[in-house]
Length: 313
Image 1 (cartoon, helix red, strand yellow):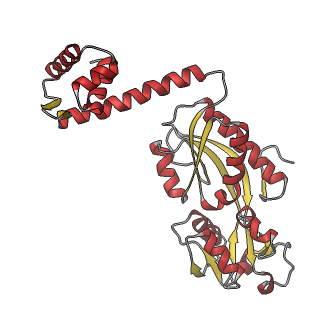
Image 2 (spheres, one colour; image 1 turned 120 degrees about the vertical axis):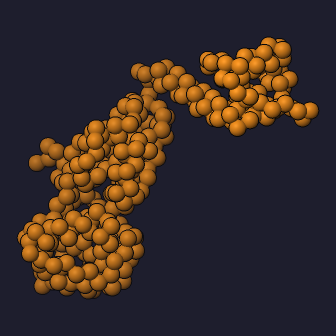
């Protein structure tokens, strides 16, 4: 069985008739029929059912047809990738982000990729970190930004920044004696009526862990596993929250939220750009990684992301 036989067989099934497939392929019908008989004999199973209406795949034939389609797609992908070496990056890149990161990064990444690498199909997927870890391990996505790269097997991880977390409130419900922008102790923050994600969320687990390590008990008034909903509740004066400045930059800019950094201890998370070990490293993936670093550095430089990148003063 070779690629030519698979292509001919796929054409027969798509056409639904020997004569139609022979005409489309430009070969004699007897030769095509003989090819099918030879294939069936070599495999020891019937692949097609014949009737007055034409031909159709048997159960075994459908399995072979599915493989034939996949093999043709892989051959075409291989040809495009080989021919494309040394030219502009091209191809699809699946990039996973948590909701808080996506709010800051997905749009500028997509716009930059479209402008600088129009042949790359950039696909941003938003999910909680647990799902992203599963997908990156399985190779269902190529790249992801994660806060923890342990237990990721042979996946590669590159540090991209340290991100600060701040406390946020509606301007008219600011609960602290100090003004917005001035650091607030964690002890004073968790004494407020907090709106946070559930313990399923990586952000909540991080805050819980830091609080416990300092002998503090975190009590949450409302649990909400939706970043936009959390922001909306806090802006309406229904509580206070702890988020990264990048996730609330839009509402801070419009004056709907105000915030302060947290100290004693400082809440800071490490972010890593992770590449799946199941992914073939293409020019498109390397270009996407480079774009991510540049966009993140620009967001930090402009103060949209309160963080420190490698090499930053």
